[in-house]
Every structure is written in C-alpha cells, then in structure tokens.
Image (cartoon, rainbow, N blue to C red; front, side, top):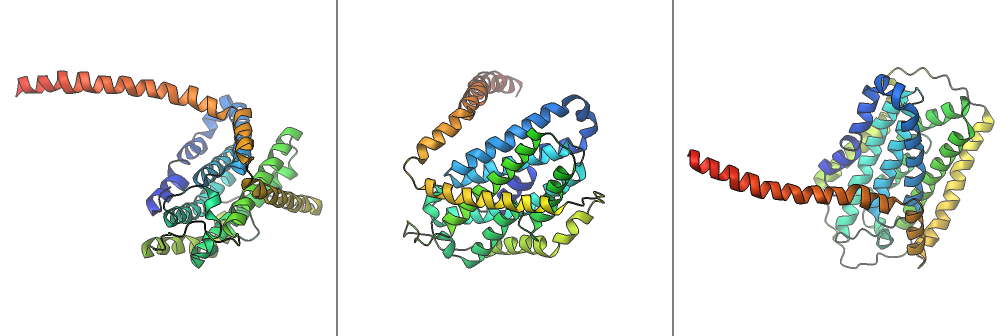
Length: 323
C-alpha cells in the first residue's frame, strides 16, 4: 500500500472490483450456469477472509482480507437477485475503503515502512485528521448508523432477514457480520492504545495534496450519503420487525466483545501459533503455493528463456541482416 491517491484508487475501486462489475454486467448469462457455484465461493470467501483477518498482524493484509470479504459479500447479494444493491454497495465500499488505504499508507510512512499492526500502538495521536478519518472509515466498514456504509448494508441485511433463506446461509451472514465488527474493533483498539508509539524516529511529515484528496472523499461520503440509494431506483420494501432490529444490534455487540478478546491475543506470544493453525486449517498457504506460485514460477522461467533465446538472439540477428 503506497500513500498515494493512485494506489488507493487502484486497490479500492478499480483493480479488485473490475471482476465484480463484469459479473454485474453479464449476470443474465452467468446466472443460469454458475449461480450455485459462485454462491458457494462467496460464502467460503466471507468466512475464510473474515477469520484470517481477525488473527492477522500485518496491517496491509488485514485491509486486503477486509476487501476480499466485502467482495465475497457483494457477489453473494448479486446472485440472489438484488444486483442494484450490489452495485450501490460496490460504490460505497470504494469510497470508504479508499480512505482506509490512504490513511494506512500514511501510517506506514510515519514508522518507516513497518507493517506489523502491533507497532502502531498510539500512532493515531500523531495526526488528528487521520484519527477522525480512519475512525470514520472503519465504522463505515462495520455499517455504523448514519455513515455511508450503513445505507447499503442495513438494507441488505434486512432483505436477508425478511426473505426466507436456509439456515446455512443465515449462519454465514451472521458470522460474516461478527467477523467484520471484530477485526475492525481490534484495529481501532490498537490505533487508540494509550501506549506511546514504539519507534521514536517517526517521520511526522505530511503531504498537503494527499490531505486535500482525503478531505474531498470524506466530504462526498458525509454530505451525499443519503443520495446513494437514489443513484439507481431501488424498490425493496423492507418492513423489518423490531425483534430483527435487535438481532442486528446484538450481532454488532458480539463482534465488539470478540474484538476486545482478539486484541488481547494480538500481543500474546501464542498469536503466531493461532495464525499458523488458522491458515493451515483452511490450507490457504498450501493452495497458494502449489496452485498459484509454482506454476507461475515455471512460466516465468520459460518466459525468460524465450525472451533471451528467441527475441534477443534470433530476431535481433534478423534485424541486423535486414538492416
């Protein structure tokens, strides 16, 4: 994550969401053949990314896993025939996630490119503006009332509760909500820690241009939040009973309690063991190494061979002969 507007744009709203946008555009073609398959992948993505994010200590990876969890959530709501809400949530997610990326980049710059979140204790005291913005962004990620993330998430969760869905899907939604609140709570507790920053040689420099960009994004997200759902006409009558409203609040409270407990584990020596067990239970590391890294490393070797032998020697000599 680099502290630049370009990187935040790429990682929050263009590169990672391009595939979701294509799914929205070509949904009528895909839904007949791959609907159940994509729903299964989205459910697995929500649980795995949320679980790993709770025990991860790398700040960049936490944000990346958070983005992955949100993309799984968007794909899930896309394939239960509320694609307009999926598109609106995609836009809103891009706004508050770009704020998180920009603030995180500045924090990494402050402590000389350190990425371990345990080194960020008390760092939020350095810059009052970043304190407000990172808090606003993370609360929006949780769907805190009257912030930009609330208007899409609340409507989506109400839709899930009103419409009859099976128990497995409901459990998946509940766990995803709890995991999001818990790792967000963990991050805020570390950033707002009373302890002073570990490193004394902190770079306090601030870029005014980036600050202007951040202020521009946060103004959009605050003053235009009630107009998000008017971008596209959405007619979802969600008259949610009061008991379900209390369920949503209870889920958030459970997530906060879990976040407090995970925050204590973050500074425990056994956190490495927990991270190792979590990663190996769901065999993510092994899948990444054997399915992604090894084949691409072999392709790169052949690519270098082709580039040197064919393009440099053969084609180079042909150009010399022709000239």
